[in-house]
Image 1 (tube, rainbow, N blue to C red):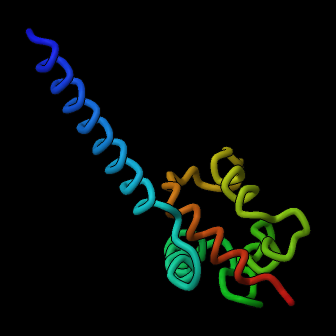
Image 2 (image 1 turned 180 degrees about the vertical axis):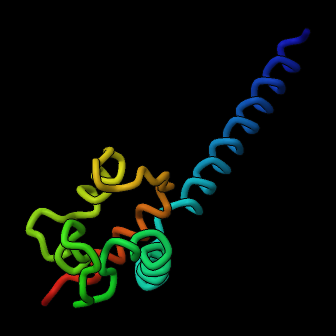
Length: 119
């Protein structure tokens, strides 16, 4: 193979790798956690579907079981953050079902819970 052909192949490989990297970055950005009202709405929907049998999920709503705190109470706890909620959901708990929650669903649920914080 001539020196010119090797350089051309090297440049072609470099271009392909650059494009793959660019598409990877664009895919990651597209899958980034949603924020704002869309995430809160999705989190509210998930909370109603999965959590409402045991927790009061509405702002200032009544609790259904004494052992399950309301989402309002969880939101108002001093140490409640999006990260603390996500860690909690990844840990087994005796009185909670072991739900499989995707990262996007965890972001949405956390956004909804944190939106309930009292002023």
